[in-house]
Length: 176
Image (cartoon, rainbow, N blue to C red; front, side):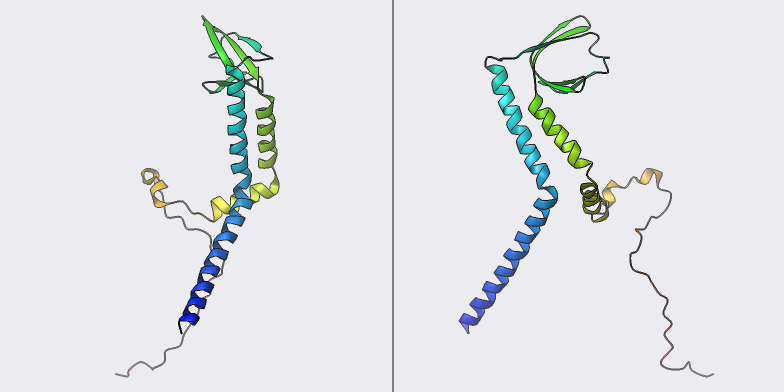
């Protein structure tokens, strides 16, 4: 009797392990690119920071007039900028009035990484997968609903048709 219970428990554990591994496999297939992307981004930033604090071999000097209102300059974080669609890691920044001088290193590896992400995000299969995974499969929670401009009740469209069914009464109504 105990061997039968042990074997049944073994099969239950095996079924759960199989279900969890399949779930992990499908999620990694759907979202694994973004995990690898973030890991590569972290490694590239770490390498660029170590290069910036060492002796940089190819330093670029950018003089940006009117840096606060310049449409070509976008600051990504404290040590990184995007200038004329090129990424730079800042080593030193000097402000003189409205003009800012950046001593930086061009980050071509991160540019290539971002280009790969953009190429992958415009893929039709990826867009359809994300739409079905995020928007259709996970409905918005009630906490996200803004009740200030509530104008009516919205229902999700039904995928199965609802048919009217008329069931005749089993017992005839009483006679008076």
